[in-house]
Length: 592
Ligand code: ARG
Image (tube, rainbow, N blue to C red; front, side, top):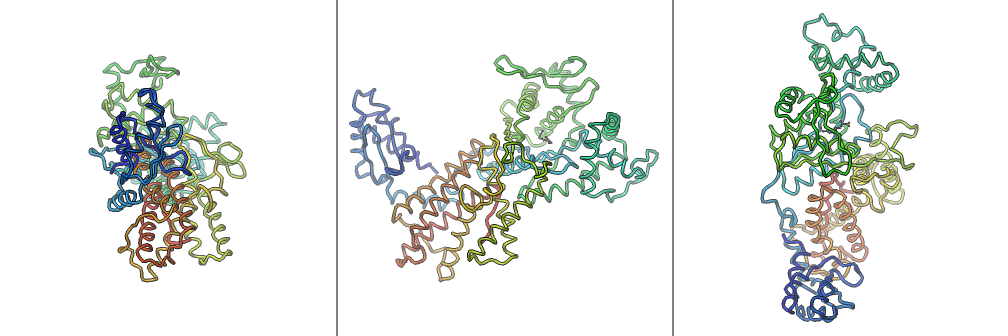
């Protein structure tokens, strides 16, 4: 469906042409002065020189051509040459009616949908998820949903870190605690037990301890490296332990992600592509892409136009070991083989920016991808505490994601009970359930409402507030609408029989105008991979709705056709808000 700005621009262009001016001057934009008009066109000023005429005279000529036009409610030429525009209520109604009948509210589907892989989450096996992982999961999930809504085929891959030194550290850490486990007996050749020899909590204690010790004790680190090599070369007991760690860890990760409505299509990881590495390296050598440098194997990726130093992409270390790079390149190879994606998007900490630049250039140069395959790095900034430093627990440790979610839920629960003191009816049980749902909106909206690449401050009190630019405010608006619709039904109203009507006053028209922006915003969010555009939109839309709500007696409206029009407007507002929060990755309760 055409964007409202495009329709107005077309009409305006025709008026310019009819008045003898260049039709290209008719560009219409949202108004800078909402107090004066809804839209504006500055074309008269832009072409004054060309026609050697005062801008206001041109604006007057154009306005004259639009007299009686059905699209515009008013067209005013204003000094020095603005065209101040309002659309007609009838045009606005027709536009919304068309949106309302479309399952995507006017968003055009792509002629040729793309297949897109999104690499996000990126947790590491046997290391607890911490807040650093929250952004990748939250942003990636939203981008996945935005592209899907926009008609593309999207595959989300968690890309587990399941192959590096951390696995060796876990193995030696476990060996210290339970040296008698059968897995460490290299003479053993039978089957290994199906039950894992540790719980997730044990596993989570093992890694930090082993990691800390390896930093102080070189011998210990050497042991961990040896264990990593043994694991990678396929020693059966180590492989069996690794499999247990993977299973225990993945079950826990899934539970954590589920509490954030984050879901992956693929649970692949670094280990999955190790078998592809030898052939890939061979190919890079044979084709002359890779060469030796100080014993290591590298691919040069710098370009003449570079304004910063881009070091070569290292494929193998001098001891022949592969690296994080090598695995990412092999993963690209595998993804191309299995899925032939049109694009791969990586949602990773922006500090890995240079790293991905090297990997992408290397993948292009060595033709792992097709010429038109898009490789996109979506780097995100850090989640900081109020002190402006990376977010920590009160005692200075790394905050576990689980605890962050729990703290947010507790704060939400407290705020909901506060509301109960003010007269909101809600049972303890429902308050707890609602707090869970609203907490997810607080965390996710708090994150997504910022441009992804920027750092932001995690402010629990602000994020959980029912007022201002927050998730709970949006949900509060939605539940307010739902509660009116429920009352309407209780009074015998039928939602399938209501019909939109022309706006009766300014606040109603302002709400209708906000609704018209939905598909333009969704298209832009998709184009720019920018969930924050949707947050900004639903904040404006919620404000427009609440303003309208305070000015209007919806259920007390006696004129039945008018009441029906108001209810239909509520239904459309609810549906658009719920569509938006769904692509952001959270939902609304029935009431709160
Ligand atoms: N596991 C990595 C980390 O914790 C993130 C993985 C990002 N994705 C990728 N394809 N390299 O830093």
